[in-house]
Length: 276
Image 1: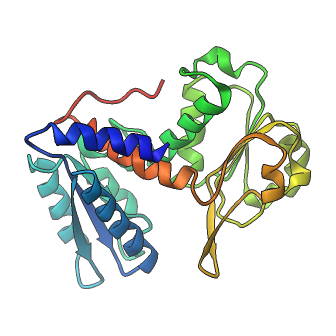
Image 2: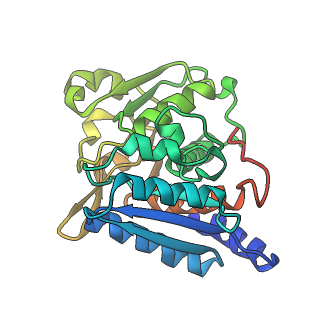
């Protein structure tokens, strides 16, 4: 899924005189955040996108970061502005996100914060695309959800919360949100679900005994163990699925593709995307 998206963007960029530019703000010294920011930069270079990293640490003030965002919002050479989450606790995450313009919020962080945005979060778009493929439908209209029971495990800022909102916007009605704390009390609900989406970040929290045969499994949670990425859903549970997204190689890479797809569709380079 990611490779197809990136190839299309690379082909389109090759025809343009001006290329899109993504600004990534890295706030703090979190090595995981630094790793992901650098990966985005490398991926951008491969598809002909300019990616600029802006680094801030404890010595910088919150106003320094706000001034940078204000500059990038008005910079005609920058089409997308994102903050690599999580950030240092010294800074007000929501205040910084709110400062990003709606037109350049290509990572959908404003949407995650419940604010107006021109874009859905890339991880949400990746999951929606996986659901399109699993349901064999190019459009996820209200009718496609009839008799589909969905369990969404995890309600975090970046995935669970915005995904719940998006699914409801698309017409999903039989949707139950399960937290990692009450997952044991929700085993019956999960077992009877046609679609199980997990975005907790706890290795193997969804076991084979918790899902039915033929279930659709969307694994959007990752944990690193001994240098290896492990998903929320166990490999044994994958075997019972009619469709599943693996970890690694599933939603994570597709999310990167959707980020650059958002960038390519920013106001300066095309119309605002429509996920329906």
